[in-house]
Image (cartoon, rainbow, N blue to C red; front, top):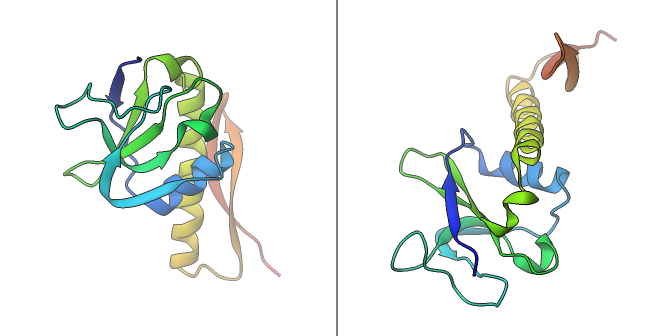
Length: 144
């Protein structure tokens, strides 16, 4: 069995997090108000993080993660952020680059959502650009 570990994130918007996971290729995502148990590659509930088992609110089940994989989860914390819950075995797939890409997709979704909420006129879109060698999300205003 592979040990699960929690990794703090700055994600607060669950809809944007789920949309970012879809951008990463995970189209089947569970969303639970109360955290549910994560399952290892044997199909057993895990108990590494606490005695009641590893749990998460947003879950990609192991069959959608890949062969011999464990569940991938995001647990809502008391401060409203979601911590990633990733098994050590799956850390090679869900590595720093994967987490960076997820954060980039998440930030694009949040920026787009905020632009729509502010009802920016005449039209706005969020897009990625490279500034000083780093990808950043910018809102572009288009005049018609």
